[in-house]
Length: 172
Image 1 (tube, helix red, strand yellow):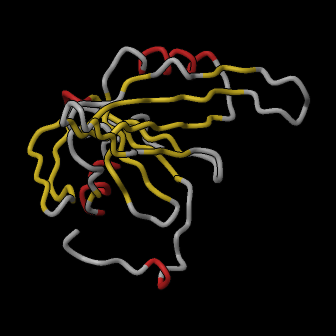
Image 2: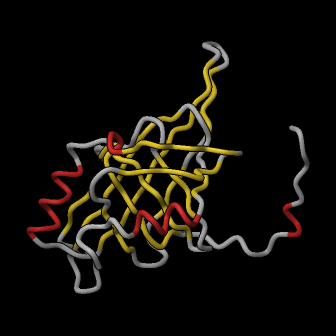
Image 3: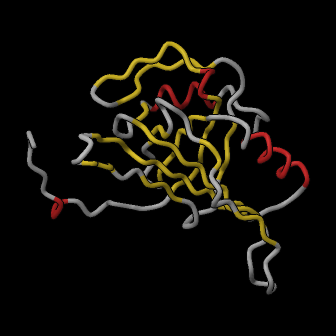
């Protein structure tokens, strides 16, 4: 450790995510990362924005260490809950499953982080497509993307994120 941290002073630790902006891993270029923040990024082609309902979706990125092998990596997982279903969405999820993607996640507090930034995320076996049983049940999808990265999760500068939003398809 090179600096301390006082968790007792922080009372603004809102959980949850608002949206996920994703694009193919191979579409990135012109990447600059300074002090674990993406300050420049060019994406060729379209990006896709998933606006998510509050209090449902989440991500994790625990550090994994194997002392015997001397290895360290981050096991990233993103779970997006989509309370909707139609043939277009099912086709989109099918296409998503065929690609490695980078996901820029907008947290509930407005900060943005990049998951899959080095090696990409891919659809995992943990996905769910359900009709529900009762009228109060969710009808829709749980989309789970997993990946393993060598480096910790970087933040994304707000200007980079705002610029990429202009490339989204379909434009909302």
